[in-house]
Length: 340
Image (cartoon, rainbow, N blue to C red; front, side):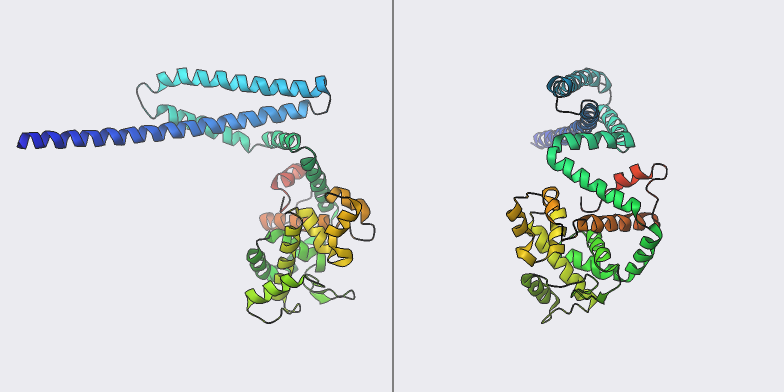
């Protein structure tokens, strides 16, 4: 009996050991598959992005068919590469179980290094433009308006303004977090509204964000969250919270469209607000509403986002790089416009 019990325990331990080994083996398989997937994704994006740049256009035979051909060839090449990998791994993994996964991870690391290079970023941008269609083209067009506005700006004056902004950063970030808006964009709003010189203006604007007629529901939410009876726009903290609540409200009204949300923030409730103006003229986005805003600052979102971009660059570099010097334009574009 004692011998039987010992044999049973030994078998149980052997089964547990086999189960543990099997789980580890599947973990290595999963790591290998994930690494191969990352590599394939990088190669696909680079190939299609390069093809999108080479065959950009709307011609059937000159543009669309060659691009589709590259996509097919890319798929076939990946299938052949996978077949080759399966043949190779049977040899690589014959002696060491983890060897194929380690080789796959090394290949994926090389692919990820490639993915951060400027050439790959250009290919990615081309593919995004091709896949995104009209919406992506409009986004990129406006983004370049932001880059151009930064290029034209007086960097010395911008630096002085950003230095003035330092004392207000904590309340702006607090307000942004409270309402789920981008803090860099909110800093851009403050720059466009007051250049971080809180004051009362002749047109009724008050304080850091030149608060005039915030939506009643936004005022109520701010009062409730701050535990006060009524926000005071002369108080910088209250002012920032009112701005964040108002921006959040208008972004929601505009379906999360950053350009329209900022424009709605600037337009305010006059003439029924931006949504009413867009319906009147049949405009569907920021690009199509711009021509109808002759009496309003159509460039307001661009001014806000160029200031937000300057703020992002200033925080990252402790200075504002000149856009046209060396490869700064490419680097700044890669850093990107806040909120986009």
